[in-house]
Amino acid sequence: MATNRVKYLATIVSFLFAAPILAGAALVAPANAGVVQQACVILLHGLTRSPSSMKKLDKALSESGYLVRNTAYPSTEKPVDELASEVIPAAVESCNQEGDRPIHFVTHSMGGILIRYFLETNELDNLGRVVMLSPPNQGSEVIDKLSDAPGFTAIHGPAGVQLGTGEDDVPSQLGPANFDVGIITGNRSINIFLSMMIPGPDDGKVSIERAKLEGMADFLVVPHSHPFIMKRKLVIRQVLYFLEHGHFEKDEPGVD
Image (tube, rainbow, N blue to C red; front, top):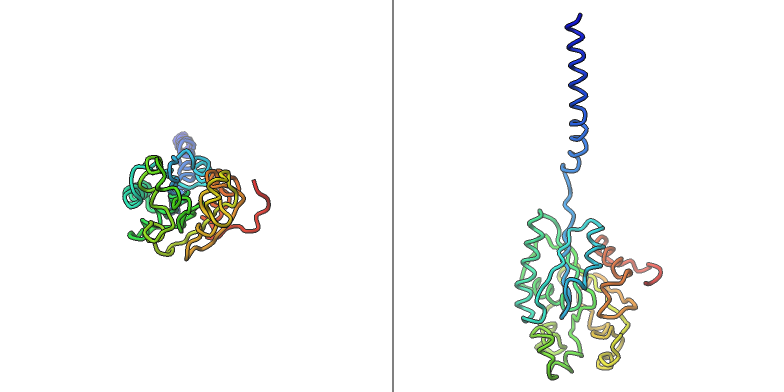
């Protein structure tokens, strides 16, 4: 009888100590079993800018569960081909080190030309979607008129002078989109001097028409300017929406 009581007590004690372990295992197992890897988003800032200009986007994407690579690159030190060939593969490798997952890109201004150049000559098997903000996809008349001005190249570098509208400029050398891309551009300017050089509505650097790209999945015009478009709440919401759905939420009420 005493022996049976001892065995009974031993069983209860064993269960009490094992229960937290079993419970922990039950909580952990689903998180590690069959997990779908969240996409990685590579951010590419514009000419003369830095990753800090994409900080709000970085925060919003991270809070939405994306793995974010807010990429720094020397935009004024090298031509487009060298920047694209050096910066993007390194960012992609950084994403892939965290496991096999889709890779999206969100770019501002010249960053859009870098990803176009890269995808023109490279295949990315796990490429997801691309959102371009104020891209000079057909070049900018501002570059046409100012690239020969004293000090322009010193400030904007070799890539800056490649973004004109001429046949020999980089945007004209690149083909239509063969990837899933949505484009957001602005129709407000904070630089009237530059806007006077641009035919039609513009964002102060690029006309609405020249932001367009043949083969794009969707296109959206917002009431914001080129330098700050990536910081606006409306734009950030639309970026998140496109990455999830492959198109913009056209009926979204209100602006910020």
